[in-house]
Length: 360
Image (cartoon, rainbow, N blue to C red; front, side, top):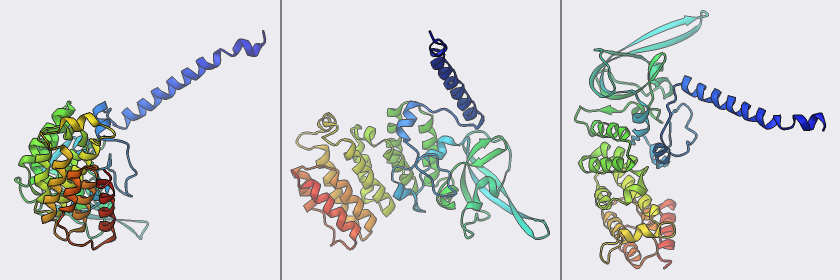
């Protein structure tokens, strides 16, 4: 037997040992960097990461990326999940220190002094919170973006060896550090709800908590909760009162809330598409009314108050297209009381919906 043949069986053993060593090294690096392990249900609710915009550190993509990038949206669940400390604070003062190096290079450091007003998550025993502009991440935004003295805001802070940092990466400063009017602001209640949701280890209970909280929410709080529910559209669609809970926001006073609600209804319908899940559709039949027909009627009713907002009108047609090819859905399409399309986006949405609902 040759020397090569005698030594051949050693190669697989060496490869396995090398793989085990690499795995251990990667695990050590993750623990050293402070990345916490996640559970299987978290991976299902927060899928594959998408590349974040420059200067933004969002952990996971939102359910509707085209909405999250708008300055009036607050998708806070990823940051609530990561944060070790969440507080409502009041900005007391901002001090600037200029350091000149090399006789010409000027560096400005800002020191922010906050008064803790209410702790929503974590423990902070001090009377003041001192953070630099780098800790808060304010330097990555435009020059016009500033924090106003005396204003109340929410800070969602993660922990690192050097101390706390703003873990709520967002496209704008107003999204990263949301301003609030008072402790009764709807956004505060929404964050308190999300803290309870992320602490729950049961996926069905999370949906139930969000659905119950949605019924008590309003304004910006509704936006945040609807976006969190959109991550769980398939589980939400199995809730008997899910459509009633969401459909009332189709006629909300805020165009942003109406648009998110319409897209959530569409996501629920997509998750129950007959081709992929026929048993789920049958389970939601109530007499002669199907889940698709009820959704289509709710969307048609919402069209009466859609107004001239193009985003809302496009969202309504896209959601109706997901209702499937049923006679009741086509009737709802014909009942949509919207004026003639004024944009290519809306014309395309109308044609997509017509192509799907008229295919029976």
